[in-house]
Length: 516
Image (cartoon, rainbow, N blue to C red; front, side, top):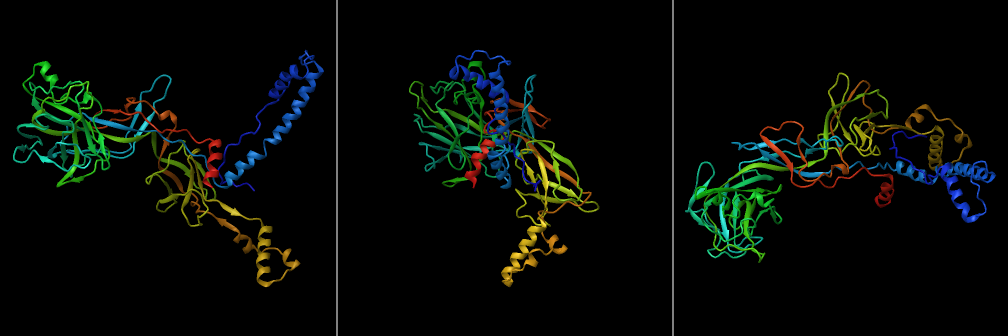
């Protein structure tokens, strides 16, 4: 019996030598076993014998290849094993705003950004996994400490009674030194942001205003400090590159070279963690950011005096979100139901990535409301009323529930055994008795419901993609497939990772015993 609803796995030969391979192998062995044989022309009787036995061997291999491995693959099919689909590569995409916005701005999920298409390579498309909210961060506390600790224990509030908050979110006041007068390695200051502001994953520009002429004694191109954010588990570095520090370690040396005003401001651009929770340290609550004086390189000079500032503010200029190498397809019409069990339909985009909650099949019966059907791994636990279907992620084949019929003879033998156990009676006449029509029908079992005849079968949404080709280098994902409002540019600051091709049969052969 042919089970059409089982997955079809590719078969391969145990011995893939052809007739020509066998002839060539025999001829190569002649000098070793029969060196006096020197005529290898096709007209030689010895060559004719070689070709004859090669043909016989080829016929035996043809039969031999159909036995062991094919049986193994058949067992995998009976177990319902399917080859795993490709795994999409993932990376972080950073969106930079074209201008500051007065209110928080949300970039929806599913935004597609691609690599540059060339004459030899197609563009590789990445899609964002979740919405990105670019918020309006506001600084609530400015705290300093003499020593750096994972859990701050001694903090000094520098805003209270000294600085005032302007309506535009800028803190201003008299000149403030945030390290000791003679800075020591480990001196640090903390910026605590309002917990009500949703700014996880944002690109933050912290603006410091200080005096250009003040000498701090450091090398502006290699300032001895580090920026970190508390992600709930540890302090995570957030300064992507030294070029993002427009203050040059609070020395404002760039402004001094250009002869600008003595009092100037500079931005420090920080890439906040995508998980940046509200935390409590001592009596302070909010989202925590810190800058630590870390003079660990004796070849580089440290701070001879503490940097001083007169104002401080922060704004979001963009945000970072996780993206996967995939393209989304919506509202694909698969076809119309014939009302028969075991129907199959083919998705156009393959391979199909693991389905999300909003990716499912919608069945619209004639004259009735559409029905949302549920995907299952197999029909083993599906009853006749269960709205179930399966999808082979590798091939894109959609399968509805099959009807399984057992042979009448098997039914008769089953009934006979049951009656024998109950009545303790063996009857030759019962053995040869014909089954009643209703008993034959009882051995037909429907696994999963059948879409009514004439129903429109539609895949609401699914994603296709994956493979090692998605493991692209940093800075290559830059082309939006459609315009994103208020976004000036997009880039991946980290290379894409973890993309893998579809599982091969050899990999499945290794995986299945471990699974069992």
